[in-house]
Image 1 (cartoon, rainbow, N blue to C red):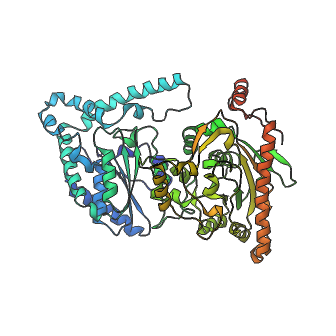
Image 2: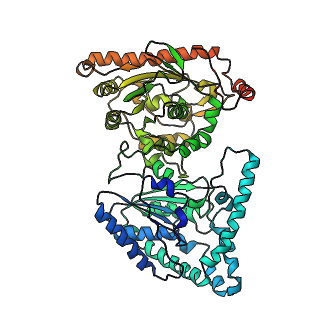
Image 3: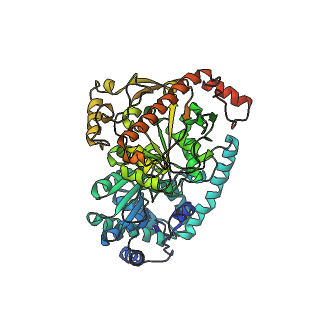
Length: 574
C-alpha cells in the first residue's frame, strides 16, 4: 500500500509494473478538497491493514510511505505492533520541523490568488531533480545525440504538469496539506518507540525540501529494526526519478518475504531483464569490459570447447572452484550463465555480507546488495540443502574469504578445509559437481597492500580489527589457513587489462553413488579429485593464455573496431 505527500497516489506510477509481479498494489488517494485530519487518515488506512491481516494473517503487509506517507506508515505501525508490517519510507516527513517548508506558511498565506499559479514552479525547484525525472525510460546505450533529443522532449513534457499542479493543488489545499504535514510529523515522532515493524528508509542527498539524510540516521537510531539506503544524487521525489527501481531496492536489502520469516531460497525472485542490464552496464561495467572474459567447458568425452556446452542443462549442479582476488570473477560468470544457459547461479556467500556490520557508513546501495539481487545466499549447510533439493545451480568456493582475500604471492593457491561436507551433500541429492578454474586477477590489477601490510598502518589496523571482531565466523571447527578468514580491503592498482579465463571441468556425477554417503574414505577421495581438477584447470589456463592473440585489452579493442562491437572476441584454441 502506498501513500505520498500530494495525496494523488501517483508516487509509485513508475514502479507498478515491477511491484505488481510480487505484490497486490493499492494506493491511497486523498481528493483535493478532502479535509480529513491526520488521525482520521490513520484510521482509514488502519482499517484496510487490519482487514488484510485478518484475511492473510501469516503474510506480511508492506506500507510504502513517500514524505507525508512516511509519517502515516509509522503511525499505523505504532498502533498495530502485533501485525507483521514492513515499512518502506522514502524521504519521510518526520523531519518537517527542520524543513525548508516552514517559512512557506506565511508566504503562501500572503500570496494573492492571481499569483498562485507560480507556486508549483517554486515548489518544483525544491521537490526533485527535473533532469533525473526527465531521464526516466531513456535508453542509456543510445548515442549521445539521441539521448539529448529524448531528454529535451522529456523536460518539455514536464512543464505542462507543473502548471497543472496549480489546478490540482489550490491555495487553500496547499495550506491545509502543510498543516497536515505538521500534525503528521508530530504524531509519528511521538510514537516512534512503539514501532515494532521492519523499516527501510530511503533518503536523498539532494533533497531541498527536507533534511532527509540526517533524518534517516536519526530514525535508524530511534527505531528498533531499521535499515537505511542513501541516494546521494537524488532529490525529494526519489521514486519519480531515473535510476531508481523500488523492487530492486526491496530485493537488495532482503526485505522481500512471503511469510513472517525470510527464506533465502523460497523467497528469491529472479532478476529482471532491466536489473541484468543495469548490473552489466553500471555495476560491473568496468570489470566486464576490461576483462573480456573467455569461458570454456569440458564435454563428457573430455573435449574442451568454447562456451558452457559442457555444463549440464539440468540441476542440481554444484559449481566448485577458485575464488579470485575480491571475487572479481563473479559478475561475468553469473551473466554468462543467465545469457547462455538461461540459468540463475545461486552463490553461497560469506554471512557477513548479509549482516548490518558490513554496510558502509554512507549506507548507499552497494555491491553487496547486488549480490543479493542476483541470488547470493549465506553459506550454511541448510541453505545448500535447500538449494540442491530444489535442483538449483549452486556456486561454492570452499576457500571462501581466505582465498578471495589472499596475501601477496598466493595467487591461484587453494585454501580448502579438510572437511568434505559439500561432497556428501551433493551425493545426497544426486547433484552433478562441476570443478572450475579461473585466472586473470594478475592481468587486471597489481597487488600493492595485503593484510600484513595494512596491519602496519596506524588507524587502518584498528579499523580492520574492529571489522573482524564483529564479523560472523563461517567455520569455527576448521583449522589451518582456511580458518584464518580475516576480512580486509586489499590495496590494488589497476593495470592495462589482460583477460579473465574460465574453464569448467568434466562433470562429476554423484547420482547412484550411495557409497559416498556411507564411506568417509570414498567421500574424501572424491573431494581430493575435485580439488585436483580445479588446480589442473588453473594450470591449463595459465599456460594456454600465453597463446591468446587477444589477451590484451588493446588487441581486443582493435578487433572490435574491425568487427561488430557485439561480436565475441576469440581466444586461444583449446
